[in-house]
Length: 67
Image 1 (cartoon, rainbow, N blue to C red):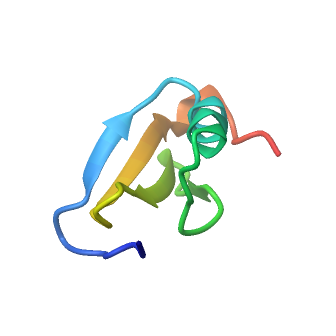
Image 2 (cartoon, helix red, strand yellow):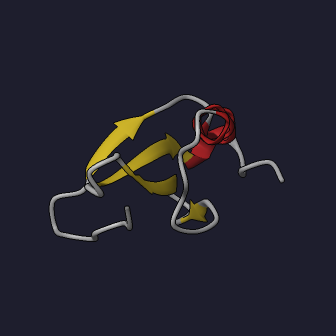
């Protein structure tokens, strides 16, 4: 299923964006792009099995996403 962007993306706050992303990737989740750094927060967009847009967010004050 592809990612359907809409105005109603559900955000899930996480403490460590890269750890959350890696865990989801191990479980077979595909992400739409690299983790976005807005300087306010880090965002990683993905979709549920039905294609609904979701994202993980983390406070950017914790430091930049680790490569």
